[in-house]
Image (tube, rainbow, N blue to C red; front, side, top):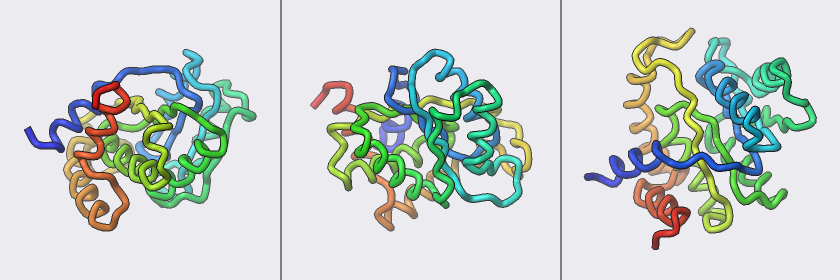
Length: 197
């Protein structure tokens, strides 16, 4: 088994524990908002960060303002929401969130993300954690936001299954730029937080 295969398998089967904050990155339409609503209903996090400033007019490319409006429309108190409308890509989002985590001394964050995007997002956030020396102080957990794998999301020309291949290419490309952690670093981080050396 390769490090990539092992990392993806372990990442997709983690526990769901309460966190200090729930992160809702823009992208993939409303599926991330829907899972965020469920997490908040369970009182698994007190604070929500909606993040993403990129808009291209596509229905799946929601802005942080759209995410906040959707959550408020579902009953979330606006005082619980922090908006990051400046981040243009996943690295920006990771840098913003990790800065907030350091400032507020959070110990665990939950990240609502579509499964096809989870490996790249997690490795990008992990790179920011490693660079900040926070990997042993901040626990990150993925909360899968499921949509159909084999139907095209509204406004997208590819299925989530097809998008997944591109995500692995991006991990390689952005890894060469120093924006994402390696699969081996991802596995080491997951082992650390499971209490295995």
